[in-house]
Image 1 (cartoon, rainbow, N blue to C red):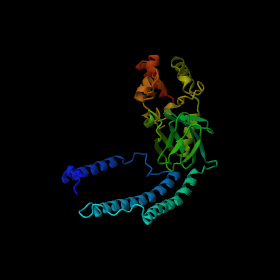
Image 2 (cartoon, protein in one colour):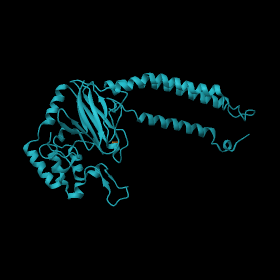
Image 3 (cartoon, protein in one colour):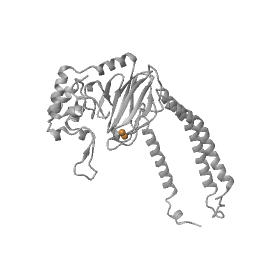
Image 4 (cartoon, rainbow, N blue to C red):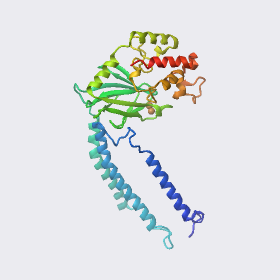
Length: 359
Ligand code: CUA
């Protein structure tokens, strides 16, 4: 029997070329995922919990590869061995064969049971919250689209860039003021959902000084992809000096300047500034220049990006939702000062110069 499908198939050479092109494209795609060091690599753990996760992942990965190869080889073998041939138009049907059905149910059950023996204790270990004088506590609040960090004991309130001392367990109490986000610094630990109305806990710890990149790993709206973060792990001495810097009040001149800005542009109705404003809608600006990033980690802190942000933030990072059927597009985050207050380029540049002095 010759099917119509067989007649309309492209010639074998075309099929081979297509297959080669497909494999080449897949290889290129896979290669694109691998950078020399993209600093966001769960295969390069640098903390105890990240190590536990990798130690579980590695053997499971190879088990999955072996099973995958087995299934692939068996599929190819069966497809060739029992293909349609003269005299084999209707292969023997095995539907309802109890022995086969029980076998291919029991094998996966056994494999999953063995995996569970290793997975369940790891889950409990990861959920353990360390206690003691060397533990650092940080309250993390996820906003659309940036991260707020409060160190209750140190009385610090900062954003996007989390500082931790190496060798100390850091207990993060995670919650959100709007939608579900997900806190993820691959080299330090796994993902943890950040849910409104609930506090989830995650422990991170870095073994070496350095900057560890992370990002929100749960789709949370328009600028989800630009909801990044970084963890700066420092020696004890460097961390202590950072803490003292963050605790310090601003200079009298800076406080005066911010008060003036607040009167003109209402900055103080959203941003905290020690001694001037207690608002917590946007990031605390008291020590903005001590951070290396802003705008939810989308931009490195530099003059050009900062003044453009101050001038017209929505054009630098989408934060409205105009697709909703309502007269005024809803907006979260920094408004356009150009549109709301007619701020000029040079006014924005002056503000950026001031903000960059706030170490
Ligand atoms: Cu926050 Cu995605």
